[in-house]
Every structure is written in structure tokens, then in C-alpha cells.
Length: 135
Image (cartoon, rainbow, N blue to C red):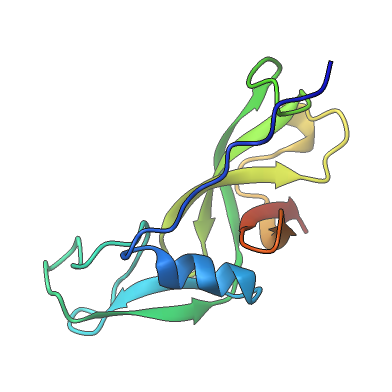
């Protein structure tokens, strides 16, 4: 039996710059020009001070493993096991992603606060997904 296609995100007006950045192999997140806070997920106002004076900025794509779960069952489009993670970027925000490159993932192989960096997964010509690997 053939695997179903992987579900893919679709850009909205608020997220277009984020997805365009990933296609260019850049991680772009928003930063408030008034209070200087970085934040993720994209939205038209700063969640800290509520200013609308916000803009996307290229960031390092580096951070640390904050939390995760190892999925042994799940969507038929994914080969189990796979790691669903929360990564805390060096710039501060946390984002949900996958950790890749860990053969037979176990908690011993995925220590909390482990250093990670982004890997750009070019799924097709329109979608690039941010995934992370341990460094």
C-alpha cells in the first residue's frame, strides 16, 4: 500500500514572509521594533507589548532542545519513530518542529538542553519545512 502524502502547511498573509524565508533557506521570525522582543508564531502585533511596529528578521537557526516526544505511532505519512520537539531559539522564542538524524531515538540520545541547528527540508518547489538536528 502506498503511503498517503505528508500534510503540508499553506501560507497566510501573516505567515508568507516566514515561509518565503524558509524557501530561501533563512529562518525569519518577527521582532518588535518597540520592545525588541523576538516572537514566534507570526502575527501582526507583539505578544509582549501589543505594538504593531513589528518586522521579520533573519535569525541564527540555532538553539537548544527544550522538550520533545518520541512518536512510535502516528500519521501514516510518517515513518515511526519520529521526534516531535519544542526548540528554544538562541534569540528566545520557542517553536515546534522535528528533530532529525537520530537513529532509533531514545531519551538517552536526546538530552534536554542539547544544542540544535536548523535543517531546511525542501519538500517540493513551494514548501520548505524547518527541522532541527543535534550538533
